[in-house]
Image (cartoon, rainbow, N blue to C red; front, side, top):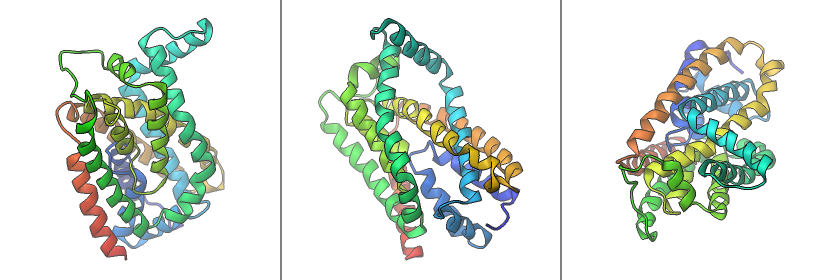
Length: 296
């Protein structure tokens, strides 16, 4: 690939950190932004759809940084969830809110974990191209619109009670194991460049009666092990030939992605206390359609 500059590492790290958590698809933006900028940036898009590439090794580092940011933002929850998991293993029963939440996350992670191992390479090499990403980004926006419209028909769907402080308790009382598996399966859509993991899982949560605040929280808890595992699975690439010449850029880009992800997560948790997915849907449809026309 063309030499990955520190400026490119910073820009892509920032975009990755924001778009991985905003419901607008980080994979889609990692294809579209370099394609729009052209020149040496355009070559990164070509590398994205290659079977093996230094650019993909670089993206791996950014994914790990994003997962670490989520772990820190929800650190108190994760301590309780991990403790709850080991408690259920020891006692062979599920009793508390966080014990139940631990198993809901495990159930939701299994489908996308299997699909990622089997399909990630195929879908990336086929669909990680500007025109395809533009189409899927437009579809992502339509999914967000549909989710907001359909949630109004869900029996008992109301926004979170601001007087309540235990959002996790509300989540586990609304989400059954079957619901967790269904929402988790929706994450498979994020293997297509342009479909947002957080967006599609939030829609799934809304359609299961969660409020926006509960849905974004559940979405981020589900995303953390998936993003982290996807990154760690390919980390060896950074220590092999694919990492040669880009390791300093990986460090810089990952730091930027970590900071961007941290602020994106805290911003979105506040945003969805009172607001909806509609602005993100508008952005995806507009940017997707303009990009589709440009790259067709």
